[in-house]
Length: 253
Length: 143
Image (cartoon, rainbow over all chains, first blue to last red; front, top):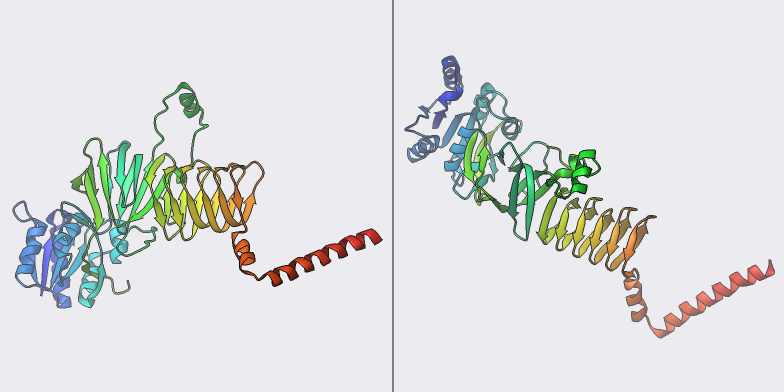
């Protein structure tokens, strides 16, 4: 009862697809194979698989595909599986899966982990992290439940799971911000910035905030990216999902 | 990006308006206008500027604070620390160079105890104190 969704762009070699299929066959977990295209997105295919009564929907690809399949799987009793192809390190750590071979065995062993994921107001989910990447600092206002933060941010990341960041609660998101000092306004400030008397260590420029939800505002809309995909634009509500995702992880996880 | 041990960290050049309320430790290196409250520790870094009350178990001040500080266990103020406001704590450590403008209250619990104690017991305590005191001076005089 396995329904597989392949991201054909990540399977550069036709032989990889065939090798995965034969491994699945050998393990006795072959099923229906589908490929995303312009006409059939990963979400549509996942929905189709669920409507056909499959108990496991498996995304074969990278972070973008995994997040897209998760969009339809959060809050469902059916399990989601992953066969990684060029996935990010955080995703690999989260699932405990390094290679597609390992993932095929994990699918057969079927160790299910229930987890909250991050989501944006437009219904896009992310398992690991979402970030703002403009290439230059951007003025952000971030509204939390009891307070507001204003910052000129060099980097802004909201993580549901990130290696090295210890979570305070399963349904909490970790917000990591790297701030940039504002441009010197007075002559004295300019002098100080040139001669480095106002310099601060990189560690002190980092902020870490734990929250279930937040609203992110910027003067001009900026893209929020998860994996390689733009999932939303500011202003945007980013929060932890109300419901859990049932996902198959490594048996050693 | 690196991470620190505190549960919540407000970095340099970050402005916060509102109430920061946390079960875990908080470290402030930026600007905060509002209340900061933690069940654990609060560290106000050298670059921090806080306007508002602070309450936690242990508090370390190395930056500027304008507001009431309540540390249920210990308050430490570094040489770079500056406080404008009242302090309430059990243990207080001020390092040379620290600036403090306000009042300090360290014995509220003891006061409550004295008020609760009966006049008789209070009298005994006073008598014992006086006796101890006189004994010391007696010895000194003899020497």
